[in-house]
Length: 268
Image (cartoon, rainbow, N blue to C red; front, side, top):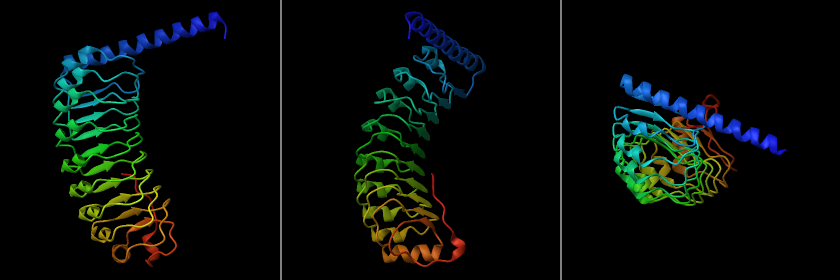
């Protein structure tokens, strides 16, 4: 590429960045004037975020996905937020000020580069949906079991090798996705998740399942394929046969069930 071409490319990138920033500032200004409860700044290719965003204290929903900035500390000023989307931001850490967002019920952090979860997230006790898909988590802290309002938890596509027993405290869970990790065993405490309807453990390294999974009487779909299972616990066989649970699996021996039950995967 010639020097001229490089200069032209730099100028075009600078123009695009300016246009994106102006678009964001315009949307924030309109939201301020109209007292908006929702704001979408997603996928504008922003490198910085206007500080005026911190003035939108009436916001309940905010989407900052698909940009290229570090999260500002003033994000913690938006204490009315109930939904926050932070998808594909290449985040490696979260600002401590986010601990103030205690009204959050939905938090989407999928597609980032988080290797651990900060302890202050335990303060987000109103969360009902937490999406951590596609990060680089190697362990799940025990305090996750304190997020007792959770109904949906997505931990797929990380690097988890084990789970804390406290995960069994999340008895309101209806959907749990653990697919695409490196789990070799599951804690017996998962049998406490009696409200669980959709359970995906596809693509791990499991050789056996805990017998306690037979307690999951609300189960509708169970995805088992991509593991090293050779059999199911008797309690789970009885459950899946009785409930006609749809489960994809690649094991040597499987329970008999009616042809009408079919197979389908679960994607919480």
